[in-house]
Length: 302
Image 1 (spheres, rainbow, N blue to C red):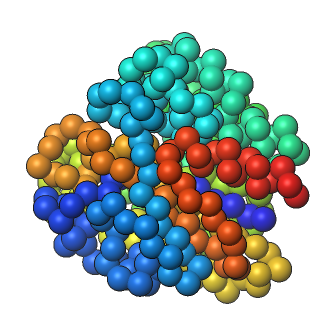
Image 2: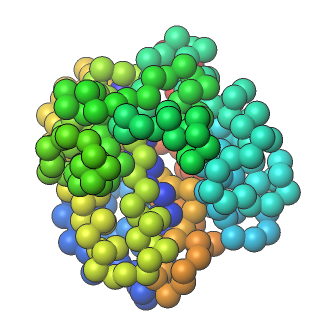
Image 3: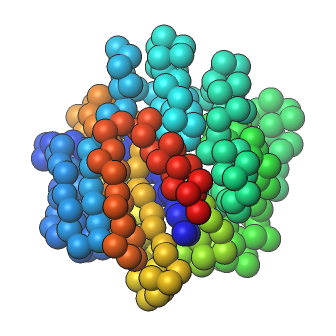
C-alpha cells in the first residue's frame, strides 16, 4: 500500500455563506465527489471516493487550534483533552512528549515502514531554529520523531519534495534558486514520491493563512491551486494498476477558510476526503482522532 496524507490547514466544511469553496473552480474535487460538494456536513460515497465530515473539537470546549489539532491528527491522542484546552500555533512540552512517543512517523517506523515528509525546507531553517527565531511545528516534530530527514532545495529540484505553497513562489522569495512549478506537475511529483514510500505526508497551510486574511479572491486562488495539485496526483495515481495500491486522505486540523465572515478558526467539522485506485473499505471516520490509528492498523496487517 502507498498511502498519502494531504493536510490542508484550516479547512472546514462550512455553509454556502462567505465560503470560497462555493465560488472556486474545482473540477478535480467535483469529479471525485460527483458534484461541487466540499461544503456542508456531508457524507458521500462516489465511485472510489468517500467523504466524511469529522469532528475537530475532541470533546473540549473552545475553538480548536493548530498545536492540539495537529498533534491529535498525527498521533491519535486527544491532545486537547490532555491539556484541558485547545492550544494554538506550536506544541508545548506536554504535546512534544505525546509526539515523541506516538507520532505517526514513529509508529510506522516501528513497523518497518518507509515514510517521508514531502515538504521542502529552506537552507536557513535549522539556523533559525537554533537562533530561536523559528520553532518546530507539529508536523516537523512528528517527522523527526520517526527519524525522517527534512527535505531541502536539492530534493525539490529532483522532484522529490514540494514546498508548502506548491508552486515555489514563496520559496523563491526566501532566496532559494528554484524554478516555479505548476500545481499539476507538483501533484504528479507527490504521486511519484508515494510510489517510493509506504506513507507520505504533505502539509499545505496557505488555506489557513488565507482564512485569517479573509480575502475571498485570495482564498479562491489557494483552493484552485490545491484542486489542480490533486488533479496532478490523480493523473498519475489513476494510471497505476491496482497491483500497486494507492490511496490518499485529504483532511485538516480545524475550520477557518470556509467562513470568511470570521477572522478566527471555526468549530465546523473538517473533511476526511478519501480516495483509492482500488476497491477499499474505508471506515466511517468520526473524529480527527480516528485517522492515524486507522493508518497504523492498516500497515500493521501487511
